[in-house]
Amino acid sequence: MTALRPIRDNDIAEVTQIYAHHVLHGTGTFELEPPDDEEIARRVDGVISAGLPYLVADSDGAVTGFAYAAPYRPRPAYRFTVEDSIYVHPDATGRGLGTGMLREVLDRCLRLGVRQVIAVIGDSANVASIRTHEACGFATVGTFRAVGWKFDRWLDTVLMQRQLGPGGAESPR
Figure 1: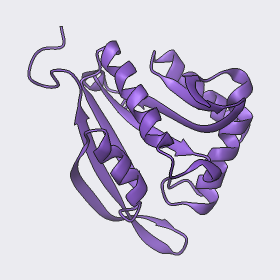
Figure 2: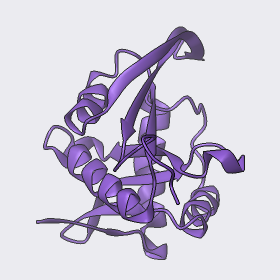
Figure 3: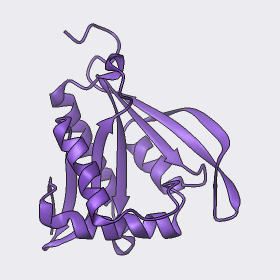
Figure 4: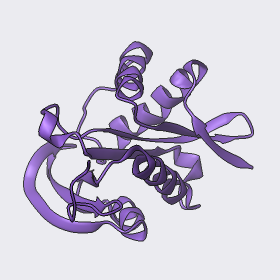
């Protein structure tokens, strides 16, 4: 049974391992060297201190994925916009876990008053991530061509967006 819950300090090592796999073997992130536990903990603290959700998928005591929403940009006018991230353990892919985590992050963001969610998807061939976002109501708004160099090839970045609640139709106040 898989439960989604807020991240705990003792989850950092498993989150670091999942992310390291994606850094070393995937194109969903443009990082080239996996960050260590200390850096992941710093990043988690940044999300939590911004009051945003950072969730893990707990499958019988093992972390099988994580998802979070982080501030999109630091300037104050962006305060109602976040960027999501989702990573699934390689042994847990293809089961809808990413979609479930993303839906929960979106629900929590909506309750926090977030109006726009941006997905910055590494690699236009990252069909699983694109389909996950489409299943959660995101639409592609653009593609930056050949902006990342990893694994001896150029990679695109796909930009997707989802409005929450009234989005930009009314004032957030």
